[in-house]
Length: 342
Image (cartoon, rainbow, N blue to C red; front, side):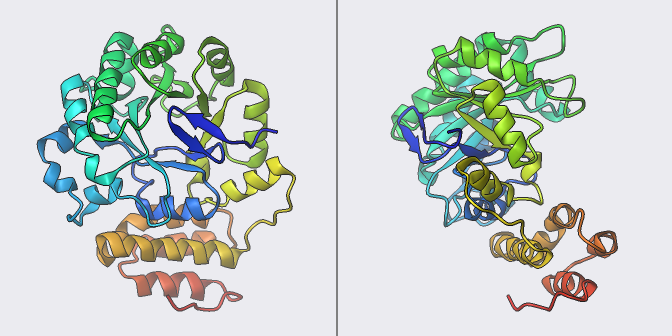
């Protein structure tokens, strides 16, 4: 049975289907929707350790802004993980310590982000070039967790390597585990690939055979069939839906049912749009209507992919400024979908 509980250090989870950290998408509104759909564990988008350590009040419990919204726990998130990125062990220690008011269930160290503005600072996937530094960073975050966060697990998310000539995921994973990490997540692409080409799941299988800690697999997971194949081919303990969940949080319910042999019916167009609209209202409660409407444009484009008259809706959605604009565009563009009150 592939769908099963998982133990990550001191953290016990009832299932092994995770929402990966995705920059610009996994705010608490989207994470809340994914939990409703069956995600067993969720990760925030990456948080700058430099920004958090330099100005912790910006992320304070009482603050209401887009940065705070990244690390706030959703009302239905019984357990969640905050992901930090940085290249300085002491700064990562301070940033993790400042998470104390948020009481995260785990802290993840980002060693996989390929974006230039992150890697040029030596953080993200740039840490794949220096596994020893990755180990020191993990050790610092573990110390902060033990001192301030009740000893919650520390995990690390890595890539296969910097490029095809430096596939050192095993060395990076060992450095993280030896420093105290309780789980390693592997996106089996190199930094040079960014998100192009195909992820190499054989790297996940190889890593599973090399370390004792649980390994979570990621990369090119878009359906329940993909999930079943990754579990079967790699033997990973858990998997992370990333781009495959954008616009399709229903993939968690689909995968749970598929792996458990339970019946499942795809959401209707109405259900898809109702869910999308509710995500907008949740986000508006956090960041205000105007900001939420701007930020949700890309999400609505993903939700309406493959929907009849979806292109027409998307052409209008890019100019939507208010919740009423969204309501009119969505529910009046589809003749068979009636308007719904929020």
